[in-house]
Length: 511
Image (cartoon, rainbow, N blue to C red):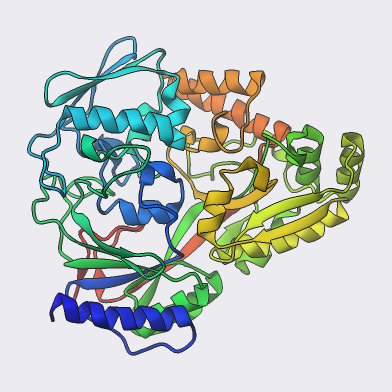
């Protein structure tokens, strides 16, 4: 089958899905898979977004110096080895792999890495969070980079390894306020992008894989598939029908009520990631109603997380009502501040609003249908918040619009999001004073600074417990609970690792 033929057929398929209810016959081409994602990524520049859908797509063509193995340990990717770290923890000397080719045919060197990391510090949410601790990034020959810190920063390597708001490495020539081209070092390269229709990536023939055994995102990355086509399908029901019919070989972000249908259908199987993550109501501390501590505490007092989780997930096997910011299986688990969770106390909310001098102005909650559980939680929250004395306005937009509007603090009071449980708390940007939430005050900043500069693991656990206590006392965001997430794949698709950010190197289609 020629590429042209595949594309003509693929475009017809996409047009049918966008149109809605009628689904065409399955498309199957050897070495080509169609992956249904929750919507159009707001950008293909992973430095500029923390949206999971951006990470899922872009990790196929952009790579970072480090990555995570299956145990969430940081291991080298474009770096040749782990860095040499000075005894005072202030200097990281990073050796680079040699012979790495970018998709444009140029060769990666230390100048590309320095320029990429400097841009990351300026534009990425996570990069900006560490920028104040970075004294300099310099080359030391063609294949070594030296990062110098003003004070020790224990999460640095985790930040450099994360594919979300990623410190990806690109040619110096394409860098600017915006990338002038999508050019990475990954096993697949961007072939074509038609917004709201598909993102096509194809095998990069000059890719040089690491040789270590594959483990999580690390080690050998085999390019078994010829092409991967990411198809934005905003409607969750259409994603379900598409994977059940065989039109998609993989589907992300599925409603949990589809689990039994998927499990009982031949040729497709569910992938349930448990525990997966936590739904979050992110509060705007920069301006508007939520800048007032009493108003934030009123929201916290009014909400009933168990009802919200039931509405969102429908079955207790998919969620847990839990105050801790990390589940028990994580070393970071603790119960500090838990007494302020799951209050559902309308009278207390009204009392706090009275204390704040609340005038009935609408509390604007920004949410979307693409993640249906976000919207369902918003509907339940509206009922409880109105009982607690608020006037509530739901602003329902598509996910790409939400990820843009949340960068404008004048446009929202609360936005609804979620996060997987991450291996390192500092990867959650919401703690940072530079995040879009704007959580900044002397007490919290001191605890956060001590947490990120401390290198003793036991002391770090104690400091994170202090930070969690402040989350509940100052209410910069609201953790609704914990949840599992449902994905689905064709039984013919092998080699897909269970991860919050699915990737398809090492994946293959069986006969």
